[in-house]
Each structure stands twice: as C-alpha cells, then as structure tokens.
Length: 123
Ligand SMILES: [Zn+2]
Image (tube, rainbow, N blue to C red; front, side):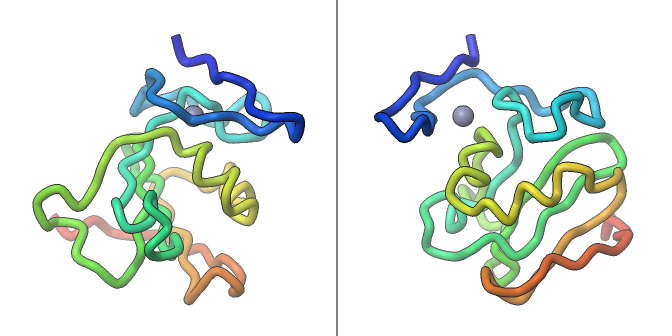
C-alpha cells in the first residue's frame, strides 16, 4: 500500500518507505501530486543539501527532479521516491502539478519563481 502514516497534530505525513509508481495517469484528478507518484529525484535534493532547481515531466510521463548543479548521471546520484515529500518541504513545487509532458520547470534558487519551457532530451 502507499498510504501514509499521519504524523503529529499538524496533519503532515510521514513519508516512510511506501510504494510509488513511476507512471501515474496525468493530469492528476485532485489537482495535486498524488502520494503514489514516484519521481527520479537527485539525492542532494532529497537530503536537503540542495534545493530543487529543475523538474522535468518527460514525454513518456516520468517525473525527474534535479538540483541543477550536480551531475545526475553519477552512480547513485538519483533515487526513485515519493515526489509529494518534496512538495511538503517546498510548497512552491505544488505549482508544477500541471506541468505538461515534455516541459521543464526551472529556477535559480528556492526564492525564485519557477519558469517553464519545452525541453528536448539530449539523447
Ligand atoms: Zn510519500
């Protein structure tokens, strides 16, 4: 199951290991990232070392989150995890819930607005 365990009184969720799916039908009916969505997340972002600066929604409906500064192709640099946990920590990412297929959202830093543009995969 991909249920979350409710945390403390603030109503937030504990994102312990739970099942996620790489490909969840889009657009999302509830207008927010579903808890079941698994994204390819750069470990630096997941661990809070760097903010998310790039979010890709690929043509084949995969989501990728990167820090925009480190090489995501390094061994072990990315992990598939619940995207919603990142939104809980950085609510501005909720704006990207309607990012179309084939689009990238990017920003210079966590206090900057998200910008969007189509992207072309390198390979
Ligand atoms: Zn979660």
